Each structure stands twice: as C-alpha cells, then as structure tokens.
Length: 282
View (cartoon, helix red, strand yellow):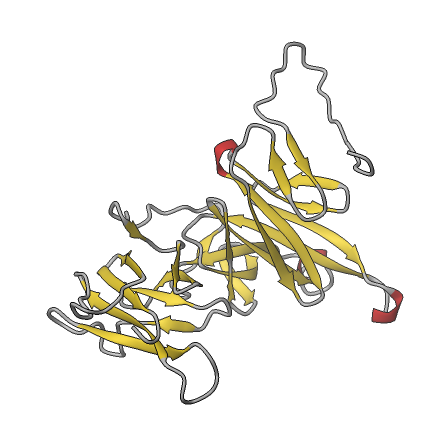
C-alpha cells in the first residue's frame, strides 16, 4: 500500500523455505500464514516496549522502531535519555520467562547467592510466555556490580524463586481449568492466576493486588467451602454490585434464577476453585 515501508531479510542458504512471513509496524505484528499473534505493551516508568508472542512459531520478541527482534530468554540494551531528563542512557532488560512465571525480580548474584534483589513485579502473559520489562543500571556494571552476576528470577507465588533458565515441572492443570500463569476474564475484566503460600490458586488484578483469595493465615477452609466477592461497576454508592461466587473443589451454585455470565475453574497444587460470575442486577 502507498506509504507503507517493506523490509526484506534474506538468507544465503540455498533451498531455504521460510516457515512464515511476518509483517509489522511499531505496534503490531501480522503473520502471512495466519498464525495467531499476541502483543502486549510492557512499561517501566517512561520506557515502554511492544512485546509479541507467536506460539505456533515458538517465537517471542519485541518491536523497536523499524525493527523486530527475537528474545530467547534475556535481552539487555541501552536506551538514550533525552536531554531534558539529564542525558545518558537507561539499561533496559526484557525477559522471556515460562508461562507459570507470574512474578519476576532483578537480582545480583555472587555465585549462587542473591546479594541484591529488586521489588517484585507482575509479569504479562504474551502468547505462551510470561514477559517482563526492567529499566535500571544493574546490568551496566559499575563499582558495586562489576564482580557480580546479573539475572532475572521468577516465581508463581512471590515466595519461591527460580532462575530464568530453570523450568520446574509445573502443577498440571486438568482439562477445562486454568492453572498458574494463565488468565481468566470475569464480567469483562481480566485477572492473572497465581498461587498463594498455601498452594491454592488466587486471582490478581492488573496492578498485582489480590482480587480473590480462598486462604487466610491458617490456610484454606476445610470441607466444602465457598463464598462471594462483590464489587461495584461504578463509583456511586447506590449502584448494583457485580459478584463472583467461588467454591473449593466444586462448582458454585448461586441459585436457580441467577444469570451466570462467566464460569471457570482455576487450579493450584492444593486444589481447584470453581468460579461463577454474576453481573449486577441479575
């Protein structure tokens, strides 16, 4: 089309047959073969990167200017700061982590010992992988880090941390359930499935706060237990409230005349939690 720019990468390997052809601009990626492409904008402060994932090609990466770049496990680069922010550059790290990696943190390590860790950050699910963006000076060397190693660690519960290259056998999610790292949509809002410190699944909002948790300090209730989470669709106090009914190891039954809009089961190592969303006014 007029005004569009076409870039072509060629190979000198004779007989090479490309698996797919990708078209992209600064914000989106399209597959000529029709492979599903997932994109997410990752942000850290003033820096943002459009990440993409194409599960059918086992390909994940990011867009920058007129370029498309693959990310295997970790990419570190520098981004110039404008003069009105003092000049210099930011060190930008983009990590591709396993699907189950709900949380991530930057670490400086001395051998196998973590000597410094950043604050915990919620990752974003991009295709079949979790991805996260960090902007810092950690990976750039300097007096305090020149003899230390830099890495990104991940966690499902925010308590037990794994090296980015380490992929423990995840808790298998039964067919029809959503396990740690997955996403569920309830009444138009999307939540991330994580695991609490007792092994039960929980739902996190986009900012990492807990939307639904079945455990307390002592653990999950015993027996056939359930409950309801309610929230208002609008800020005014007289508006009706949306509801999510939940039940441990079972399907909640809000009532025979209740209009259930979304029903899903989430799972963790300790068990399953059935959810049923009911819109306000039902």
